[in-house]
Length: 317
Ligand SMILES: O=C(O)CCC(=O)C(=O)O
Ligand SMILES: [Fe+2]
Image 1 (cartoon, rainbow, N blue to C red):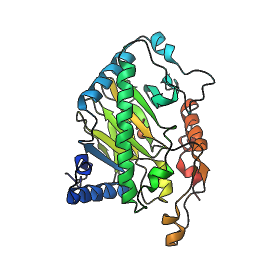
Image 2 (spheres, rainbow, N blue to C red):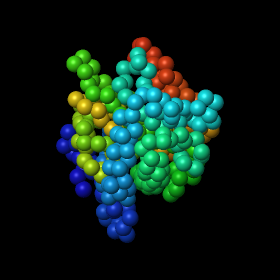
Image 3 (cartoon, rainbow, N blue to C red):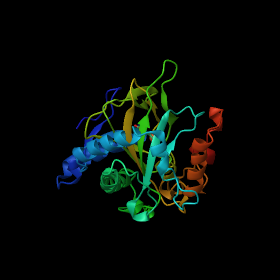
């Protein structure tokens, strides 16, 4: 295991430690994750149980999908009035957005919200397989983070028991131009835990000790980061990671899976990080759904002034 001490790397954690009975390796891996989560919030996982061929196939099929003519892609545009938490299907960032990408969004296959293109024909099956495997990986990461946070066993599992607000996006970033290379602006994710896998192009960068560092793509690896919900629950002890995507000379493809929490859930710093230790809460409470809708509005109606973009500081006290 590489603990990522060097300034320009993130730790690599071998998840097979958690599938074995060997206590020592599991403890070391847990410490590495705890350290990363309390500083900049990112780590890489290997031997996580999702077959590399499955991820490669998903990337290949998404490449085929995004290469279709616009009119084909728009056939899977979100249905008006759908009950899905966010618009499922194909969308492109608005023309005036600084973010230069397009994406295809799916929810848990069990919910019946998903739309799929006719071509490529295998897309649906491969995406749904990937989705299920990523739920399993995120559930394991959540259990590890639960222990890193010193919470009672299974606390997060029980607190976050609904999978109705999780979603996954296949992303395609456009090539950089002479004047622009902003694929996805600097941000933190709004959910609990994010998993990303990507093609060989590169461009994902994370903020570590005030420096932007590049996450080198490596086939079969998954990049993990914590989102705002863990930051709020832990009253800022565990960090929602800051990251961005820089455009390269050619299209880049990635998948991001967002392990979230139910929209009806009331979110506020846990007593373990506030009253029990005499610390004032750093956030007021809110329903997850409300925050998610505010963030979606950032995307559909991007404010012209960066300071008007809503992020978790909206709930700071
Ligand atoms: O494409 C990537 O590598 C990261 C995507 C991301 O950060 C996001 O969708 O929130
Ligand atoms: Fe992100």
